[in-house]
Image 1: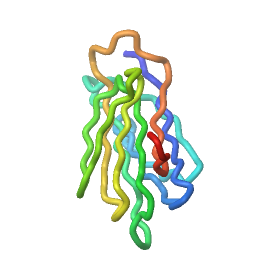
Image 2: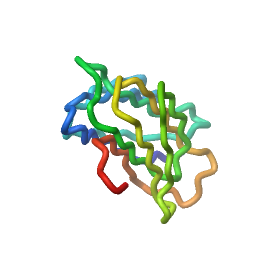
Image 3: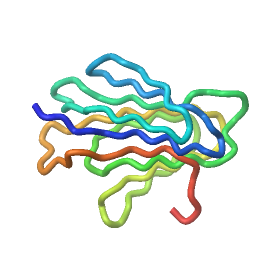
Image 4: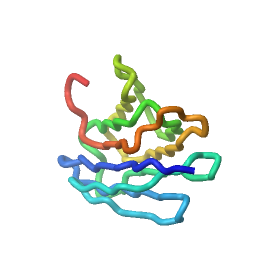
Length: 134
């Protein structure tokens, strides 16, 4: 089956925390520092592939809200402690997860649906400091 290129962007400039990205198909883990990214091929969930993204704990709590911007076509599971707000962009292209400041305890598992029609050749997931008004 074909693969889709997914780029994971770390835009946590204020907190400068790293992201841990685990790619299941090749059983590799990557540490992505702030203002960096990684591009990985994503196979379908039928092929057992997924990306697991989490924020790396550091000294102290996160002082700003965190915003995760993901494509609306992906399937995902989000695990978090505390409050969570999920909103969907009006144009249907993106999904935004807004996580309140505090301990950086969350995990995001992204899978590609088996029956995805008109799949884009590439897309991205961006984790960053919350932008007011979004």
